[in-house]
Image 1 (cartoon, rainbow, N blue to C red):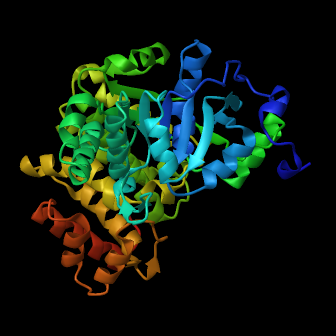
Image 2: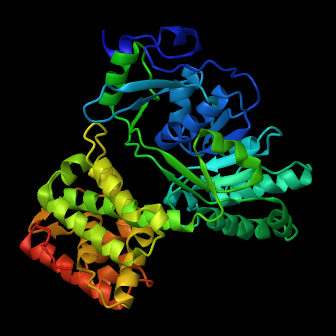
Image 3: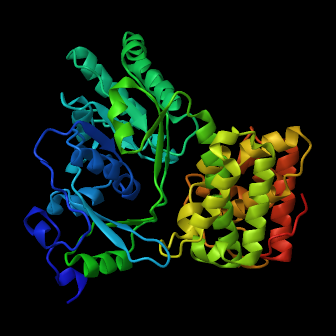
Length: 464
């Protein structure tokens, strides 16, 4: 029997699921969490924490909303919101957990507004990624103009103010530096355009705590669906695979104190945790992805197992640790070493092209701040220039000794490809990295691009 001939996971078939954990709690109360962007990461991260809270008798049901694509709703609605999280580690049997924390799944801006302003909603979380803040959404109403997620939140808060509702807490779960304050600033800007009286009300009444979240969740594949269905005994089109590791560090607010019961770290200042993750996990992760694309590896695990890439990325880590100045209590060196171990997990099948996508929004957070500090101290930045050069080559379609790398998805891809036709690598590097990048570093990136184009796909053995 193939996976698609099996019965579908849903409430009526739940008792047939072969899993180590099944939801045994009441799923009928009104959801108190609204989540925007209920993709693979939210399922393997937020929903797992919520599931554990529900098992403790705490209210934590989620109302999921996908702003644009109906895919999540199409996957989850026939399954009554149930889905499987498969935890995969090398040398261990896959552990399956059926999660019941998702009460409903909807699509569209109207659904998002309704979810954020529902009387029971106390927390709104977001995992829309860096590019999700761009104007690509439809605002409900006759104008049908394009709106950003911050604009939708501002509209929801205007409704809360009008109807005298207690506003929820808004917690972004994206890999953005100071993500809570960034979201707050964007919402205040949007609120000003709606009603000049709204920003002061938002500033006085709404909390936007920053979060640092961590769990590697590759995009699910058809093979994942088949493997999980074979073990679960039921077809689950919304299943996700992930690693055992997970963490969630959030600026402490009284309304979310219960999260600490399930392992969420509530702290006064998330800044050092943000820097540790962006610089020592996300940055090296991008370096592995681009090194893999350059040399011809499909997966992150395959790339980091390559001794040439491993040496190069360890050099990136050492260069970063040299200037990171993180508190010793955060164990930065041990954290970085653990990250490299996690990259090597072959059970995840995390693809280099997925991790390498959207470099225009990722690298300014993960790479350029380290470059800036090293440049200020007169320290070499050669490895970082090579990483940036590979990203530009793969996004702009620049041939590496006559062979084009796999093209990466990126909001700037079209513009970069057009700029690359002018055959001015210095100008292209400046265009790709933006005005914030150091001029000397941009020249170094252009030089690295030139070497890639003429000498071919090899990572340099650079000295510190």
